[in-house]
Image (tube, rainbow, N blue to C red; front, top):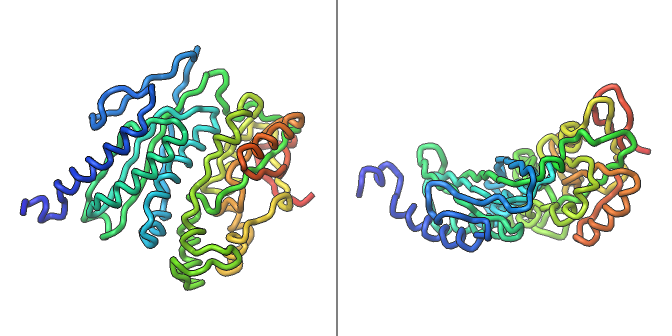
Length: 341
């Protein structure tokens, strides 16, 4: 046994994982991909037809949702979560995805698990016609407990400079359209896990109350991509807010310009049963629920009054439920207020 293996890092295992991952990476290569699979850096060409292309980049992870994946023995869905979350993050700027890079860090690398994770990443990339341009798999036995891993990724997209969304087009009178989430997405899992596994004392295969699904099905529901529902509208959208950590208020305020406020009608959409159960079982206040969870709304679009119906039809065609959840009003500073109308 080598000294490195004795210290906990198995190079032969890493090579096997890389071999499996390379096969998945090849299946995502688009016509824009350049260079060889397995190089030190991934390459993609900027598509033709842009006058002033701007690259839009974002990096993120899936947080402690990976602990649910490990408990369930299902590892591909968090890979797809990572891609969809990242696609949404650049979509809010009007960008189309070009390339993705993933990062898996673990104590002891298991090739089968790494392949499952990257399989989910590759599936998400193919769904968005995006190249998985590369990534990194790190073994750090002194840092991660056996069976645990962390998952993160970076995305590169492109948008025409004069079509990029920044929030500066938002104006009083704009309407807020909320798009349904598929559960928790990738936020609030530290609190959700504590409630489900400690307060409610549920196991991963137990039924989750009021849902007709198991705990694993509810907690591993894949983070939805809103690209199909929103791409047809981007020329008419004034701003988009991806509802992630910080909830509706914490993300809406990020795209509000000076002189306006967003007013959200709290009764305009139904909370999915998942959130009602978490609130009741965890004895969580309504205010904290709003700060931690998306409450069933994963994306919010700002559109003019005349474009509401067009947006609703596009959502329906993409099979995404949507609601008119509020409006933009003149105000002294960018804030978000909740009220029932």
